[in-house]
Image (cartoon, rainbow, N blue to C red; front, side, top):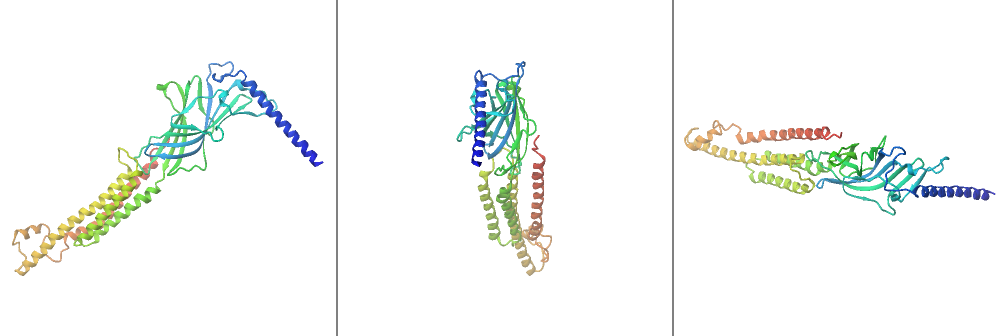
Length: 400
């Protein structure tokens, strides 16, 4: 008995759905019998009114952001909504709800295009383009698209930069008096919650309208994406190594001026290591005709180490003169006192005020001062640098 009930139930379901499929096919054949896909739809009695097309975008993924080419790749679902009175069909009981249509070429569709460098529709298994027709004539057209878009970038704050990438979607052949483009009400842009962009974060996005009177009075939709660079890689590969190298260069200030080979070797090795780090990181730094934040950092760090070299040359020369003075003083002392008995001893008086053996030599005093001056100068530079670029990044390039 239970088997009989089961058989009758599934027979009823099959009959209902079979009848629904036949009904959908019948309505579709009837609508498309005299349908001209080349003519845009218009409301009855208002032929001059434009066809209103509303657009919704679902961003699936953003990847391959290139600093060198200034472009990025975005994958999205593009949904277009409009009404076509020619596609209305009766559905008093609300059984049909909607009729799917995979042969898009059979009906009129908006001729929208992006200002992309490259683009493609997906064809995996079947064409990822689909339309659904409702009984009131409303058409929802969905397509899956991958686009390579141009994004003009400003690298002044690199690698702490924030970029704004704009995309435009416009009608190719229909002017505003024929096709009116609008964003859908509510939330016209939806972003994948699991979106992950390598080295970047999608901070914000906004929609708007663009006006291009020079190219004709065509409808145009504007989408702006605000992305912020993640600078963790550059922090570990550039900033931290350069801080360490600059700090190590200060060790030369604690070495005796007589240790000429040791101090010179240390500074030259540090300069060579900076050159190697800079050489490795250069392919990752975009070329620009202006100075970037990372350029200032690298230049100042190299300049500080080079200053340590100049400081050593000065200290070494002073130390040599001081040794000659001490030799002269010892010679004078053996001959009865401190006298200005020669031109040589007279010249060294410009370096030392007297012949006292208890006075701290000028070379050592310079070393003492530089041991404090160099770190303080580097700390002040860091404060100015990080405040300027981190704070500046948060106050500039804000999307509008």
